Image (tube, rainbow, N blue to C red):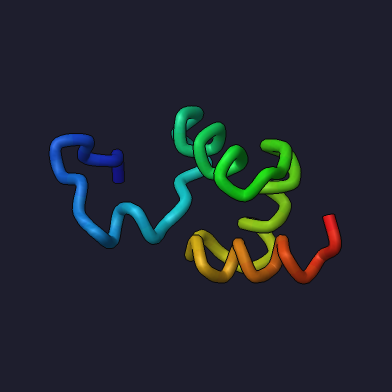
Length: 61
């Protein structure tokens, strides 16, 4: 289902959508990683932002 950009609630901010270029760019910048590293982390642990952040911190970048 497409991302509804008119609804910007809390749940939208807790999930990472790899299908939206701006989300990949913004989340990668937030975590200080490359887009490829972010995509690999999402594939490893799912799209929950907290889980992705914990995975990236634990991976030793």
